[in-house]
View (cartoon, rainbow, N blue to C red):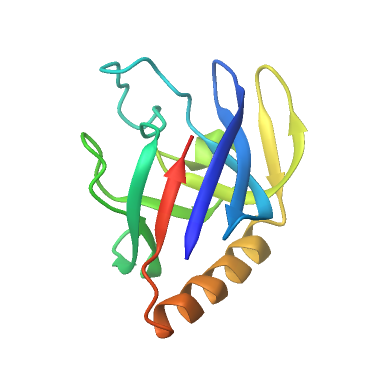
Length: 137
């Protein structure tokens, strides 16, 4: 399964975009701010654009199996998960439906439901023996 994040909105506090699954629009995304290469503020910086492997692994923080974006240079424990605002992410990708995008804040709704649907699709792909990859652009 191929996931693709198209980063579309770049603001001082956050980055907003769209998530596609195998070429089809799935939902909106919310991440920390994209910074210049080499500039990183811990817990407030989006991961670099690129292609990464995604594995379904146990999250100690959340206490359940979740998608982990692996081998991101300079980052650890990067997940795709539910959340409503940029305050809910520390480099991770939040999923949901964008309701408010403004220069100082963004808000996702239906995040838990969206994440549940995403997990169902990722689990099904894993059971079929598919590799799961994500490209962020």
